[in-house]
Amino acid sequence: MDAHLRRVEARLARALAVVDPEWTESARNLVHYTALRQLDLRELQLLLQQHGLSSLGRSESFVMASLLEVRQRVAEALAVRGETLVAALSELVERRQVALSWPMAEFLLHGHTRAAFGSKPEGRHVYVMVTAPGADEVDRTWVAVLLRAGMNLVRINCCHEGPAEWRRIIATIEAARRDTGLECRILMDLGGPKIRTGPIGGGVRVATWKLRRDHLGNILEPARVTIRPASCTVPALDVPFLVLDDDWFAALRAGDQLRFRDTRGKRRKLVVRTVGRNEAVAETKQRAYVVEETRLVHERRRRVVRRGRPMLGGVPPAAIAITRGQKLVLTARDIEGHDARGRKPAVIGISLPAALSGVEVGHRVLFDDGKIEGVVERVVGMDVHVRVRRTSRPIVTLRAEKGINLPDSPLPIGALTAEDREHLAFVAEQADLVGLSFVRAPEDVAALREALGSRAIGVVLKIETRAGFENLPRILLEAMRRPPIAVMIARGDLAVELGFERLAEVQEEILWLCEASHVPAIWATQVLDTLAKTGVPSRAEVTDAAASVAAECVMLNKGPHVRDAVLALVDILRRMERHHYKKRSMFRKLRVSALEDGRDPHASDG
Image 1 (tube, one colour):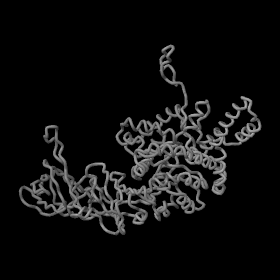
Image 2 (cartoon, rainbow, N blue to C red):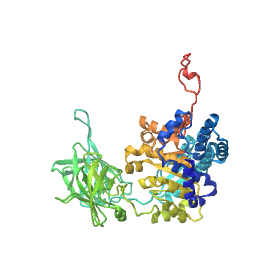
Image 3 (cartoon, rainbow, N blue to C red):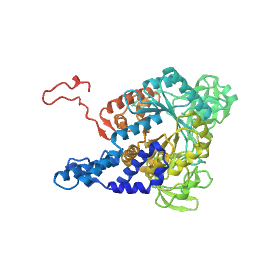
Image 4 (cartoon, helix red, strand yellow):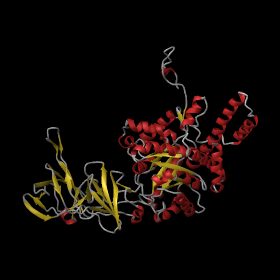
């Protein structure tokens, strides 16, 4: 078996020759591990276990030494039985002594991790990363509080805001580092190619306001409706509100009424309660549905002040209603999407038409983070006819700017977009790490290396597509030409592309490949998400956070309770590191009663 590994290594000699010299042993071990895992070893593993030998189940980081050790033990056992194996045994011992050992593999992984993420955190090996919110929310207090809680890295998503806001965030982080004396590295994620749904036209935007009722249907309080002038620059609300032209808004007074017939023809009224400079609040005790064609009659003491039509704010844009079994046309044509018309199916455009060039009959198409799943029935010119076979609810609304995944189709699109290239100069100057989104092949890594030129910055390979996962060994070899490097396991996108049922399996395989190549891994997507958002964790996410100890870094998303999430994660990681290191169970003393004397388990500090 070790001969097989050496033959594969020889075939990849040219690829190994161009990796960074400090990564040569890591690259060789990755080649050995990948070659080993092309074989089905399960029967051999059981046989080795039965004879008290290593089953090779924990050999990721030092493959050749593990194989040679097993062979040596077998040779020694045979020699004891009188076999003439002295020369062969001597050769095995000599080869094993020069092979990469477990202590050296551990040294390499920790060194590569520190090169990417900074100094080791106090009391643990696993680092904590937090995604930064908008520039207006990131102040010195926010950063300092999280640094003291245990944050080690901040992630800035280049999909949002721009260089001016990013510069403010980075300056704030620098100030907080000086205030606390704590290290904090910065990762800036490039946006990458976004395959999204195109614009939708012809839809009707409807605003409605719900009343709070008790279990008997009695109204607890009227619905409150916000009204704003058209020139208002205050950020838009995320609930429906009315917009009046400036002169009309200026005429509003407390006590005025806005009467109308809603979309069902029912008589309704809004009573104005307060009026401010940029906002008025009205109330209604009846459910109403309003569109921009609805005519309002503005009355004061039963006299008409004005008639007119409002504009609507905070109302979701037009959408297409999708149900299981229906047909949907995904088109590369430059047209607005629309709902089904008679016998003609609904149509939706795509932001990157070239992505459809590799789509064939039988390929899957997923929309909006997998909420809608379809399969291609036919391809006609620039139109892909999709049959919807699964939806997350009986009726799902598909809107513009929602993600599209084509997991079975080859995509003729590189990971670096023109916008990414524009951002690279800023990122390389200001950040410690750059995140390469939607990496699918070694060519994507080579393109990033060429675009960076001589600029020194670490690279985080974001594995979020099926192609990225399947090509990971080749991607890692290419990335080893320019360290430091790390891998982010983007579990949300992977679950959409590969199916949620495969996620646990796939994230384990990525962790194994990272360990084999001594590359630090980042465990990402919705870690302690409920805790960060609400202040109360779910049981499932605590278990998930505990499993993240297998990685070198864990990423948390933003939220009003993110400090609590950081503190909880640090506590979980410190506890779990006593039990696990990568795949290895660490047998510290358990805090359970001793069977022979019934001692108190809490008498020991573990």
